[in-house]
Image (tube, rainbow, N blue to C red):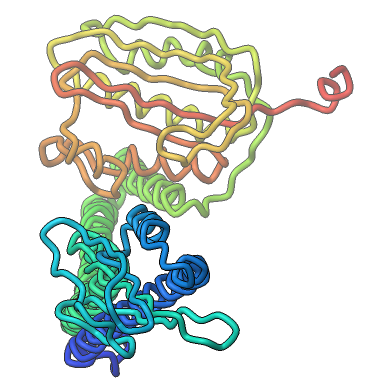
Length: 459
């Protein structure tokens, strides 16, 4: 069962919520700026009021003595404060005694106002009494300047910038949330499609596995049929010989001892060939009874020189490279049959003549072979190499199959290499075929090194 994983993001934070939050943040930024403006204006009025109180306390003595010049000096001193646009001092009869105003600004009233009042623009007029011992001697009037636009914008910029950034962030989060939901939807669709594809692939793999099982079973049945047909064919030929000789012995050989012996020998030869065929089949199935003993393959091959030379004929030159010093454990008779069969196969692969090389050498394998079949260890290697026609890759793969042969009908049973392969594997060895079409073939046999008890004690 296939499980589809869902990637889910927060569901409640929608783009509409993000837009609402962004508008709320902008509104809050504007409100904070307005509130900050009012606080600044109130602070400005308080600061000017303090300066007005100082001025009122400074001019009381001059008002008592009517010293207008001193009053004017105190008023003029306020010009250093850029927050003050105009200032004036009135006497107890509300007449203007001294004043100053900045250039191109509206003059102060001729008569003293009675209280602090706002004026046109973002300005205010601060009015304070000048008293001494509870007696009002006059009035101080100070009018504040209007804050420059650039300064006001600078003061509001930070708050507005934060508000705008927060609004943009909220809008971006809303957009990202929408994009995330869309991506999640696409991911779910792709995951569903992937699950369906995976299910289809699993079904196809199951069908393919069934088809492969059926193919292997078919190949097994074909191999069994081929093996059975080959065995039946060979045994049928042998039985025909035996039956024919017995029939001749019964009908024609009575009273003729020489004829009787001939027919008996013919039947016996057929029986012997049948026994040889059975031994080959047992070798192929790796169940023939063996009598292994310690063997020097070089000495064994040397003892077969005359037999091999006679078997391959005069067209084939034989090279002997017997360099192995180690011994191995195998059945001598079966090993001789293997070497002889390989030599005859090499002869048949060189119809125009060539060179047959029989080589033995010691071999130590530290790592596995490229195919991974041969395990590390010490081996005696036997190579039977020819310079004949070689094999194609397809023929090489089937060379050890029973009853497979490339020879014409009647010239080979197809059991030579299969028998050799079965015997070598039964002897815990390995057989490998190295071949190149047109350049020859090398049959390599690896048999494990065998050390006698005396040799092990010496080591």
